[in-house]
Image (cartoon, rainbow, N blue to C red; front, side, top):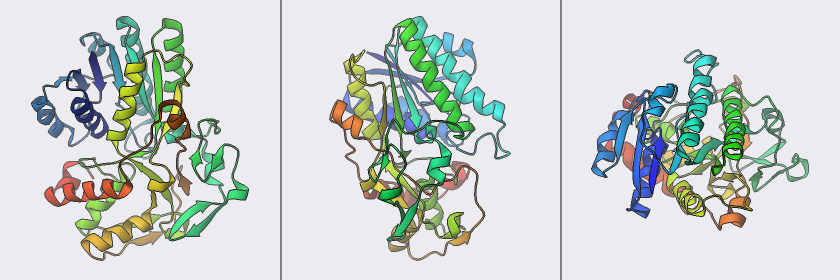
Length: 355
């Protein structure tokens, strides 16, 4: 089986590739990357050691996609993953859409040409901002928790379900990913190739390119270890906002199921993949973990709200468990230890990854 991974030298693309090669040595994996992200070029020689061919190309250019060899499946792991993209002054809204939407169109056309199945990695940020931002929460053990009696429809203490509202506003990033989902399902239906959409929680692990607006677990651990300035933004500057944590190796397990199932008749095409409530953590709790490992480091509070921020988001992966008997196997503590060990071995990681 030939598998094309887009964004193969990014953190998620490279981690998935390594996990897939380990689980299924017979897979022929190749990939494409534009190396726009600082640090991504470091993954190229490591993938070459595994016999994985990496092609320099840009999904935004249709001709780059047309030149790629034929694949049986495409794993689309290429995107600008920042919820602030297009509004932060670092990238334009047009650039964001070129990366996350026009690039998807070129991937879909490639799949149409080669009759390749598509596995699209999406995000928790396709869910509506307003009900999540207005979620009634209480503080327990330095972390926000939703008040059970006040939860909006399709949200529980287990997390946000797939049928939670996706009505705008979402953020430009979230809208670009939701639009990509819709187009992917339409292409799959019209041109008759299988499409699976995995809405992932916060992906994290060793070698992630940590920045404050993406890769928060990696950024926080690396910055804390180096005694760099850290601050809690918004929510009274207390750091109680909560996210779940998911390792790409657990995503790879699902991807193998999906590729082997093929068209998957009778299964829902969109599903959440998440570390779940058991593997969620607030920034304040993450700081306590770092303090215990590296020694105390003060974190300052900034009450200024940030666009699109929400107090709590955990995805409910019950559907994935029912459909595939899938559940995460790597705990948040295992992920944190993996990141910390990488940070200790790579003292210049923040500079390398552009933070």
